[in-house]
Length: 126
Image 1 (tube, rainbow, N blue to C red):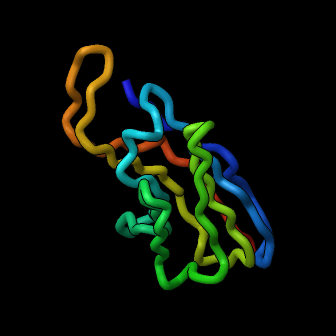
Image 2 (image 1 turned 90 degrees about the vertical axis):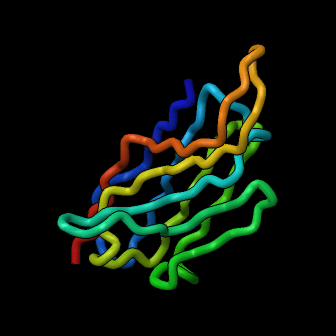
Image 3 (image 1 turned 60 degrees about the vertical axis):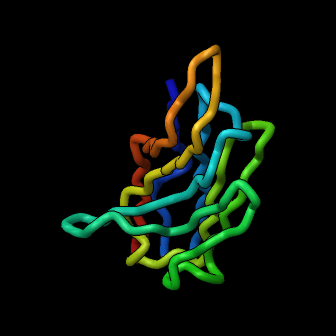
């Protein structure tokens, strides 16, 4: 069973920094297609923040380019989001999303799929 556990959220003043972590279990990083971060503010849709592919190419939302950096540690099955120069408009629940390709494990074939973490709150005060 694939599980994603996020951590690192909290309350920070504008201009401050936070680092989010997302640890994946029940799967090895070799079966990742892409993993990334999405966020959802109250009464708004969930939007992509940053994604890193299996080949380590990255994609960022325009609103966070130059301020946020996504990285991954395959040995730890963990993806990170370093957030600098935080703004009040960055306030949201941040979710980790893993997209897998089809793979064999324990004699069973797993279809490609998407998995979400439970989310971590980031609040930036002005």
